Length: 451
Ligand SMILES: [Ca+2]
Ligand SMILES: [Ca+2]
Ligand SMILES: [Ca+2]
Ligand SMILES: [Ca+2]
Image 1 (cartoon, rainbow, N blue to C red):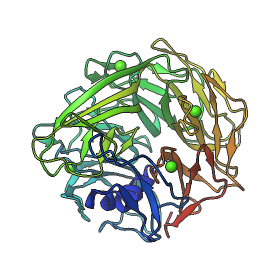
Image 2 (image 1 turned 180 degrees about the horizontal axis):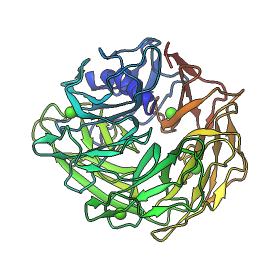
Image 3 (image 1 turned 180 degrees about the vertical axis):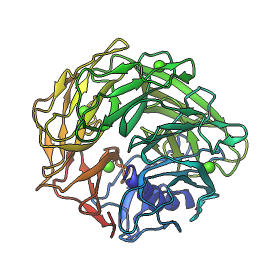
Image 4 (image 1 turned 45 degrees about the horizontal axis):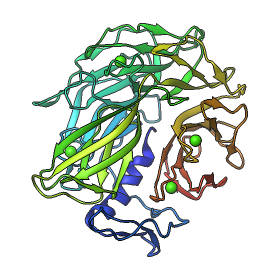
């Protein structure tokens, strides 16, 4: 259930922004949502009005023509042709009736039209629990990680000039049921490590969190870092608590006339510092910090230079959401060395799932959201490098089995909004962030109809 909001977000919003190069974004209900300047030449203003509404309708804009049990969704321009394609990680369970096919998929985007049947199908079936894009070997092409549960092996499908391989080029040999995964440069050498959130199965359900270190573009098949604590960890995410190890870099592209989406290889992105098209600074774009891309609100002309200057999180601290009997917490990174036990935890042991970092109050420090299960969703504020001991925000009421959550600024007012995917409720909620204060009841909900 990862990243479901992105699909909703991109499908309904992007298609709308891309279609028109306007300074005014209009929501489907006809209300004005946003006015902002396009670039420094057409200096038409700044944000004048921000909608109090979520700009999505109540019905999907796109539906796949495949029925699968999906555990992960992640947009990326995997073929680098300038539009966002959708990777889907599938798994097997004893549902009634069980769906016996669970290859991983990519739905390809051709000129803004997303295929409803998969163009890329993995040759293997992996019980994927989470799916993530990351440029493992630093060749400028995103590779695809399938983090696998049910003791199936996690794998990476490598991307090359020949395209994304349908068979894995790396297969883990760890002994874990992996539930969630994240990329981040833990040791600061410019290559992305992989962190795995794990569980076992009864009568031995507890496992450490693992990190696979990246040695110049390759991973060993067994992890070289394990947390000293054993537990069930569901989700994992990197941020730099005190902003001590942020790194500025850039990536340059040449537009092909159809391109609006551009790959940003070093993740997580702390922030986009500036984007220049033909040396003119532009403002009409959105960012996906965890997967690593930006999407312009229009297509630069063929041959235009697109320069993205950005800051990414290096030597990140690692947060994990943990299940019943254990407290979600943060493992601190000391100048490239990850501590083996958490330096901060919530103290709550009722079971949480889904974790995400974003600077919800725009003070420059990433704050931590955690999904509740029979408990509210919560945000802990990062006070200039020190996490608060109690939630700064919590949603009204309780949830049944949140599966994942994610931040994204859905209404383009500069404040990251929070999307939450429920498994038990079969529902996606969005909590709008109003100048640093999130609604406590969902501002928008989508009832999926199935879990
Ligand atoms: Ca593409
Ligand atoms: Ca590294
Ligand atoms: Ca903050
Ligand atoms: Ca917002």
